Amino acid sequence: MATATTTAVFPLLLLFAAAVAVPSSPYLSPTTLFQNYQKMLTNFKIFIYTPAKPFTFQNPAASLFYSSLLNSPFLTQEPTEAHLFLIPFSPETSTRSLARLVRDLRINHPYWNRSLGADHFFVSPTGIDYSADRNALELKKNSVQISVFPVISGKFIPHKDITLPPVNLAARFISAVPENASTSSFLGYLKWDGKTESNFVEELRKDGDFLIDIERELLDPVENVKNSKFCLLFYAGDVAWMVEAMALGCVPVVIVDRPIQDLPLTDVLRWSDLGLLVAARGGAKRLKEVLNDVSEEKYNVMREMASAASKHLVWNEEPQPLDAFHMVIYQLWLRRHTIRYARRESF
Image (cartoon, rainbow, N blue to C red; front, side, top):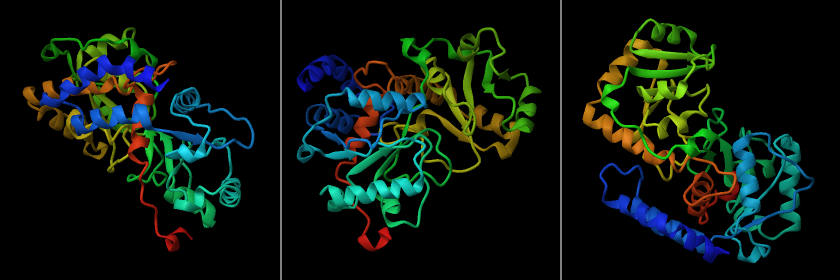
């Protein structure tokens, strides 16, 4: 099964490897990524503990990831072959129940104690909190948490945790980035929920260089994305359309008043070069200054990179080579040799 997967992905990997020589590559390290991805396809093995009871994920990204993993060639029924261990539990599981779950793993299986859970991971769409209980604390501090972007502040540990790209079904049907970005009608386009940063949005509405779509009231949002140089996203708002916007050649601008480290695929993509982070507290005037300060040459590079990166943020019902599912698995592959915290720090 792994061999078939490798054969199917080979033509795409040839194109992927060509990115090594492209200055505008969206990847942190194209050569390393290409080599590691091939090794992952043929070698990576994950063991899933039997859940205490059946459960489902209501979040689309978490559901797609979990169902794709259950049907993937990465699974093994032999725990001695596994690089990582998945602890499955319902998103509604309480902290006390999580502590009991880890305690049972510690007592009934030999794998947790080898690394205090550093070679384990779990899926929690919103992330889990810290706890005074030793078992729950080890899960939080040592095991890899997979959540959905964006994650509530304080529930994400950057050096080990992973976020899932939001699901946008339309993005999978976009095959080419539109041309003539220099003739864009608008400097920035924003899909607004009608609530987030209302004063800031009101400033944007008064400026003819920005187009505001209030709760999808515009008749053709795709055309308006194509006709805008930058697509504005509130970090705490609707981010699911980010992938579609990037695929259409609209450079993403995340509006947030604090540093963030939970962007999807941070081990793979050069987010600092393909998008912008701008603080809302500077107002519309400051935002406009930042966007206008981007030279045409730099903008064209960012646009090309954003479009290329979007292909790895797309979810498919049946996983495809180099898509969101495989990139998340790749990030897990990179964490298979995680160094655990010292034992005294786990209390």
